[in-house]
Length: 359
Ligand SMILES: NC(=O)c1ccc[n+]([C@@H]2O[C@H](COP(=O)([O-])OP(=O)(O)OC[C@H]3O[C@@H](n4cnc5c(N)ncnc54)[C@H](OP(=O)(O)O)[C@@H]3O)[C@@H](O)[C@H]2O)c1
Image (cartoon, rainbow, N blue to C red; front, side, top):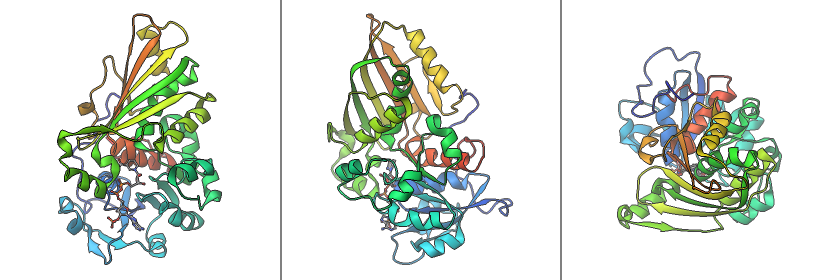
C-alpha cells in the first residue's frame, strides 16, 4: 500500500524548467508563514502546477527569495501584498495558509469567481458555528460556504473532496488523532473514556510564536497546555461523529516539545471485547489499504521516520488482558498535518493521483 512512495525530503527544484503551459495556475495566500513556505517547497516540485501568485502582509512586492533566502535559485516569483482581485486574475487554484478569521474574509470572493480553494485555517472545519464562536472567540462570517465545505482528510472523505470546490484542511493534531481512532470508533470497539496525549513541535504555533518560543530556549523544554479546552477538541469529536455515527468520551491533553517538526499522539483506551494485536492490525489494514500515506507499523512508530514526509505512521500495543489498547500516531505537522495534506487534497479535487508531487 505505501510501498514505492518515497519521502518528500529534499525535493525542491527550479521552477524555470519544463513546459508550464498546461499546468494549473496555483496561488498561496500566506506564503511567508510556516505552512505557506512548505507549500511553496512542495508545489515547486509538483509536475502539474505552476505557482502564479504568492501573497502575505508584505507592504510592497518583494522577491520571495529575498524574504526566504533558502529559495534562492529555486523561484523568481514575487511575493505581493494580498490583493484578492489581482489574485483572481492570476490563479485558478488557491491555498489559504492564513490565520483563522482571515481565510473567511477572502474565500467567498474566490469561490464566487469559480476558483477552487483549500483552506489550511480552522474557518471551514466546524459545521456548528456555536462551537466556532466558543473555541475561536469570534462569530463565523461565511455560513453559506461553511455548509458547502468538505473536511479534507483524504483517507476518510476522498469521494466528497473530489467533488468539492472548498476543502477545509484538517488541523495537525486532529489528523494524527482522527486517523488513529477512526477504525476502532467505526468498528464500535471503544469502551468508555479515551485519553489522548499529543506532543507538537514548536512550528505548530506559526512562525512568529515559534520565534518567541525559541528565544525561551525551548529546545530543552517540554510542557502541557490547554488540557480539555484546546480548540482542536471539537474538531476531533465532530469529525469522528460525522464519519462513524459514534459519540466518544475523549480527553485531549496537548503538549509543546522543543523539536522543530512533528506531532506524536499517544492514545489510551479500553476495548469492549477481548482483542489480539493481530485482530487490531487487520482492522487498520482493512480501513487504510487504499491510503498511500498511512503506514501501519508492527512496532510503535518513531517520529524521525515521518518528519520530512507526507506519511502518518500508526502503531499499537494491546495489554495481556486483551482489553487495554495504546495507539500511537505520528506525522510531520507541516506536511501531512498541513501542506502535504493540502496538496493531496488539490490532487484529488483536480482528478489526479493523490500522491503526485508528494513522492
Ligand atoms: N503550523 C502548523 O503546524 C499548522 C498545521 C496545520 C494548520 N495550520 C494552520 O494554517 C494556517 C497558517 O499557519 P502557519 O503556521 O503557516 O502560520 P504563520 O507562520 O503565522 O503564517 C501566517 C501567514 O499568513 C500571512 N497573513 C497573516 N495575516 C494576513 C492578512 N491579514 N493578509 C494577508 N496575509 C496574512 C502572514 O504574512 P506575514 O508573514 O507577512 O505576516 C504569513 O504569511 C493557520 O490557520 C494555522 O492554524 C498550521
